[in-house]
Length: 239
Image 1: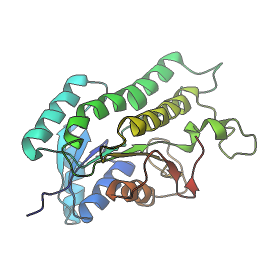
Image 2: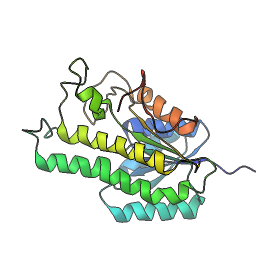
Image 3: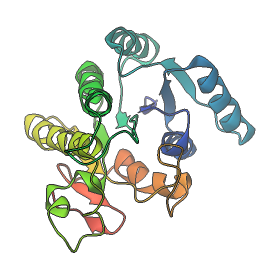
């Protein structure tokens, strides 16, 4: 009997993360959503259950290393391995802005969550991913993290200057690049995925629904032989 494929979706209690969890579970994976708030996790599980989708939840706060370590231990005890890690959790702060005007506290917090927190989760989940036949890591990035697009006056992203957020996603892309190189030959594939311009409570506006935004991350979580790529719905994105 083949072992179940296990997926962890950080920040999976709402928005894109919730829809990624839904679609992965519908594809047959056993999904665990990581959430900071237990009540919000319960609400998410109830929402999914109404659609006949059953997932688990686990306490996970990217700013609290103990919760990350405990989550890894619990997943090992429950399942013994991890096939898919979707690094979805992230924040945006409207006190962020151009380099000359951004709140330093906001920029620091955004970087701490979006990059350092994700790095910590990835490090602690890697031993479990190494136990899977073929591991997948999907880093939820953004086209705002592309240095090429940030420096291109013709790019639609050129005017969106949020030094903390953009830098955090550029750093996340560096994690993808370096981890891809480090894990060559292990069977673990790592990609950055920009889901598109999705309307969530992160920003409050967008042109895509969370369900539409989940499609590309789910595609790369489920398989594919390529790694070390930066993808968006329109195709390959420049670093």
